[in-house]
Amino acid sequence: MLKILMTRFRQGCRTMPFPKGKPPVLPARYRGRPIAAAQGDSVDLGSITFVPDSGIRHSGDFRMAVSGREDLILAGDVYALAHTVKKEILKMFGRSLKLRQVSAGGCNACEADINVLNTPVFDLSRFGIQFVASPRHADGIVVTGPVPRNMKDALLRTYEAVPDPKVVIAVGACAISGGIFDAGPEDSRGLDTLIPVDLYIPGCPPHPLTILDGLLRLTGRIKVV
Ligand code: SF4
Image (cartoon, rainbow, N blue to C red):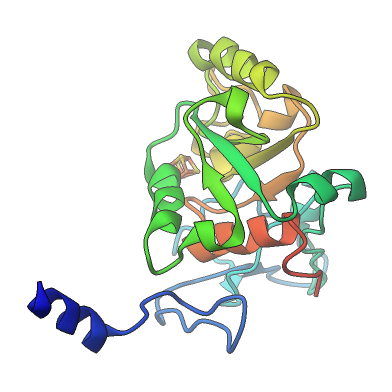
């Protein structure tokens, strides 16, 4: 026991200070938010999969979550990062937000990066944000995957089971637009064709910091910059 305590003491606090302090340093291979290639060109962050040979330049910035689908269309350097939800909702969820995660046909990479937020490094619960097992205990849902036909009913029933007012968060290109499954016969063509979405977090998958940054913007802990 003493050995364990000594090890923990030596290790110190492993939780990153984000959003306080200096911005986190990510590995050089991390690509981050794309930059539109040339004047007049635009990039839809809600549908691209950030593949290395796409010809798009990247900024290395992990901040990508937005409040509106149209904000994901990147043209030039202007990019409207997410803002908080409506004041009355913020009053209820700003300090305590319980979320139900719905995996609707994704590949599990988005889900894995959401799970990472519960590790000591990110420690999501220090912000009062927690994932719960039942939609009836939740203030909103986090959806991953392209919502294929077989998941549509389950998703809509989960959404209905969350008491009002509620928030909806789309994580990953699949949930936002269909992603790599877009135009497939089973794909729903984006979560917002089924239910209203309050926060869009692009990526395939998004970096955990991108997800955390989006959640903190939604709950007003990071103000729009
Ligand atoms: S957006 Fe990419 S990483 Fe996420 S579920 Fe779809 S294919 Fe997987």
